[in-house]
Image (cartoon, rainbow, N blue to C red; front, side):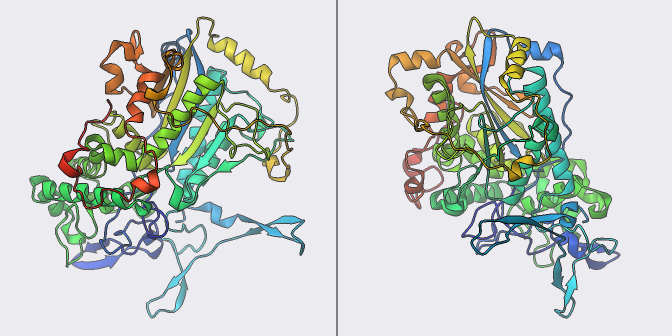
Length: 560
């Protein structure tokens, strides 16, 4: 997903300030005004530093066959908790024709209604006069704002939700067919609107109107302020991480700028580069990652925004992807401090939820519930709208991103927690249980019915705060550690089981016969090593200490 524009906000917010220019027949021609709004530019900061947004567009694989399902979900393991992290994916924004806002209809704000409206976008003309932003055929409707989720993005994230439903509802029976509330779900998004919209589309795919009762309660969606956000690498609000990011980017520039690979890219793209910066480089203007961003955005959409064919040269795409992945993710593989400040907070949360589920009979959240004082219902399924760098950072920090390409649109990671239970039910039995667990299956469902249904408060709800949250493995007693050994963690990245080196390397650290299942004890031990104790204060430490800290003390290999 996306990165920096306003230094006061997030490293994932940026708006296009420049556009690549097309030069045909010896003349420079500016891209259509509407296309500029979809493009990456240099970071809006004094360093001109930018993070790439897009990854290659990719199709989903076919759903698991019954044979695959039996291998991936052994009957002696019982699925306990699923946490899915997904990235988002003119006239490319049809939603602009049907915008809806909540508006007050009384002075005391006791009554509300919806206002439906159409969005038009205005911009500068040649002489600074106000003119309409137009698409390639002169359209003034359905034009996208910079960084907005496009129609294609809405389609693919809806399809992702449908795939999640097929697997976890229809095939495994882990989640119920019909829901009257979302109390057993944790819905989360970064503050970036397209991440929220993507998560909402996936939720709609997983539980469409036909799978929600007419009295479906308004679900809670959790987010954070930019300064507190850990669901992506937050270099805008972490000074030391920002330093490290730039040091690794500078290292990549020194390593790649004067190579044959960069000569090849320059030969292809130089006539579209600014005259002041004709050579393509990691740190050129636009940066190489900015060129990648624009290429991948156009690859995912229609012919109206296609670039000249040189930009889709197969060799060039492989070179760009290879360099960009090294620039942005090598730090996670090589540096413990980079992992800790970049993605350690999120990984600590992910592991906390698993440990609480294993040791305390279920994870509950005081903010994810629609009920005022929190829910008694343990959370079974988490769905988080995040970013491409979230996914790649997580996998790189676990040593599971070798030889991988930049995450394509709607890529996702599923963290699955299993218990080793001799009496664990088969998928069919689980499906029967899940189907019967919904007491309101026969009620009629209504589209967006949750928008007008108030949540009913629940009295005497226990505190969701845990006694084991953020407790290091070394501080847990032997009984607790023994329990964690009976639970297994698996990561599936775009439906592929991933292997973590520290889990594979020791027989005791994984399920006998399948090293993609890591014991929760071993998984926690790996993640504990880069989970921050006080992220905000640690962001102000070690400033100016170099790429690996003083005496290279933070240099370490990920995944162990």
